[in-house]
Image (cartoon, rainbow, N blue to C red; front, side, top):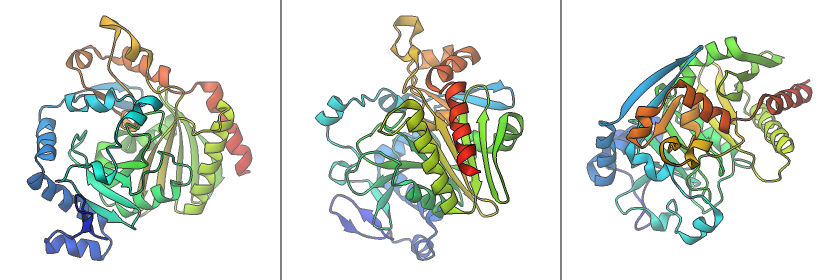
Length: 344
C-alpha cells in the first residue's frame, strides 16, 4: 500500500508520519483524508475545484418520506454532457489511464489493482475516484467482490459508488468506482424509513435482509448482510434476472451504492434503469434541461450544471426525470419475483 507518483510510475509514500501509520494498519479512510489535504496544497486544479464548491447552490424538495436535493454545480458540465458513444470513446485518449493523468495527481495504491484519487471536479467536499490500474471496460460483473471489499476498507467515513457504462459512467471504457462521505448520501439516512414505508421483504432469514423498494421515484433492491458470499451470489441473481428481463447479453443499466457498517455488515443498494438520460435532456429551448442522472442523483442529490435549469427545477420535473430513466413496475415485479423464488 503506497502512494503513487503517476508521472514517473514510481511509488512513494507522502512524508507525513501520520499517513504512513494509517497505511500500516490498512486504514484507507484516514489515508484518503491526508491524500486530499496534500493534493489541495500541491495541485491547483483540485484546489480550484474545491474552491468552486463554495459557490454551489442547493435547494430541497420534500417527497413522501424522503428528500431530493437539487445542486447547482457548473463544474460538472463536462461530466453531465459527456459523449459516451462508441465512436466518440474511440476518438479520445482514456482520461483514467496513468499516461494521461495530470502530473500533479497522486494516488493511493490498493492491492496492486486500484488507485484511489481525489476527484478534481467534486460534487461533495470529499469526493474520490477509484480507478482500476489496467485499461479495462466499465463492468461490475466480475468486479463486484472488489467493490464490496473496497467499501469495507474505506467504511470509517466513506461509501463506494458504481455507475454502469450506459447509465452515468463518463468513462465507460475504464473500470472505476467513486467514494464519497456517507453523510452526503441522503438515501442512507432515510433508508430505514423508506424500507418501512415502501419496502417488500424478499427473504426472511436471520442476519440476511433483502428488500425490494419502490418509493414513487426510484426502484431498487436493498441487501443487508455480513456474509460477503451471500451478497455476491445474490447480486449475480439480480444481474442475471435484469439481463433476462431486458433481453440483453451485455450489462443491464444499474447504479450501486456500497456501504459497510461494523454492526450489520454490508448495505448494498442496486438501482434499476431503463434509460441513460431523460427526455428533457434532448429537448430544445425552454423544455431542455441539462441533467444526466447517475448514482449520486439517485441517492438524493440531483446535479444541475446550468443555473437556468436549477432555477426551473421543481417536484413535477424531478418526478418526470425519474419516470423517464427508472424501470417500470412490471419489470421490477418480475425481478422481485425471480429473486424470491431463487432465495426459497
